[in-house]
Length: 300
Image (tube, rainbow, N blue to C red; front, top):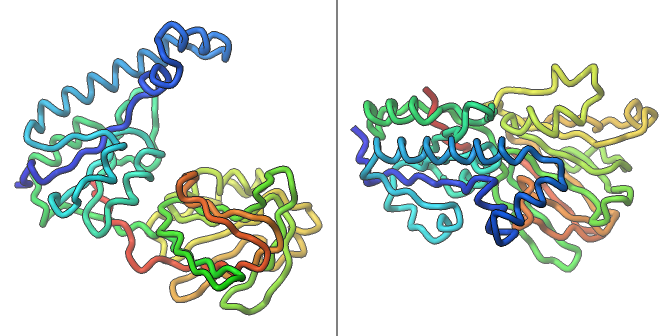
């Protein structure tokens, strides 16, 4: 059996909680919802369900440690054998950055209204699973990640850290054209002009990556989360460039490297996280490859 004291469960605040904190009061939050034409009753109902699900789950795992995500960077991961994300997909991706080589479980905090493409458990199935497994016999899948290194023109090197879902390369000024040189293994270079380059893992392929494809290609765009490759797409190209670019849709296998040289005042963002955004100034050279350490994801 799993030692519940060595399970760390990271909880996200609900939208209602976050908004009340942001806007200062429930009254102001409801006024803003009305201006935004949001269904405040639906948001509060989701909040109530998530709180009920959390309390029931906590009652079933009384000895496990529950924290909010703001506490996660300050926790010694060596104290735990299993990391659990309790929330939605975006929360799961954030928590995954702290998993290292430990198993990670994703729980959908509101399965009634949220699908959670990356979340394989609901609170009830997770509690049942944890009650009958040990850390040595949990079943895991190896989900691929992307790692990157940026060599700046002044010689500075920066690591982007591993991306669970996606990496974007684009102009800092989002209304400007993104311009860069792109090649694979520093060969077959070509210049691309578009609204930005999007790199995706299998875990990220059901989101923005899929929707960046022409409508008739979107059904085929997603690929398995444990694929031994990642893919890239130049976003919002003209049809002429879509037909002309050799690397309009790149496919990067294990051992290969995608190279990008900036011709813009650009930025590189990992997993849509503003805290993981890096300068990509003219002349900077970024190299992306399949990360050597995939995520260990607990599966039913």
